Length: 126
Image (cartoon, rainbow, N blue to C red; front, side, top):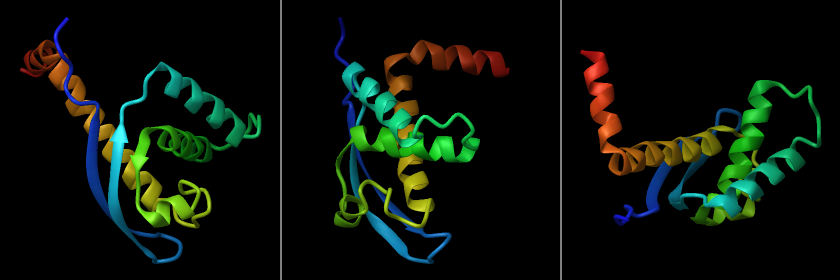
């Protein structure tokens, strides 16, 4: 079995809140979730939804992002910790920006692990 690329990354965000105009910046360290983390994410996501089945897609996705980041961020700025991982914020922008950075890392990580898939996608586009 070959060795995998690093499962951690550090990135910086610089976001302005859409509701408050507050400036959110700082460095975050993300670690890919393992099976235990993915289970914890699913459980927290369901708990945050309060078992409501009629949540809007936007609210459901926001609750998923909060749950996901709770179990995948291993270092974050003080304001993030003080906001209970974004739950106490009025603005969605910083949560979204952090989540997007994790998705970008995941895409790059998978390209390194499965380079043949990237080559297949390139051929399909021709």
